[in-house]
Length: 210
Image (tube, rainbow, N blue to C red):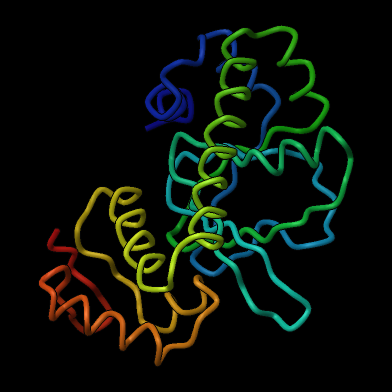
């Protein structure tokens, strides 16, 4: 599938003129699992549209501890990179490829011109901001008002919804890292969830039953 068809498929609300403009000015890159697209403190010179794969967006503290925020999937863009690019500020997040990805990188100057020239781009940016704001509010609510077992259940359901599958391929340590907890705590809570009939534990995967 060529890039025009790929953009049409993943971003169906983009007008044809916008897609042709994107192809004219953007750079298409492919990244393998483990590649870091954005680092904390880095200046953002372009925003990214995801056409294939999955990218993890997270915060990292001075000790290297991670706090998971959300995933970027095909048909989505990183709202935080858009804001940093427009305001010419350094990134406050990390972006790591967790499934081999293809991204379309749009330079800052073109992103600004798209806002005034293409209504479908303007609508897409506004919708991206709104969706990410609502998603981050959910994350904040989980941290502020929920216990760890409730946060874990929310995390698993969110992961299943994002990937459109009830089989979540991840380790207990990866979950612990994303939730800023310990592997022992996560393993104990998952075992309790299994006893309650909510999940079935496999080696390096978790099957969500309800």
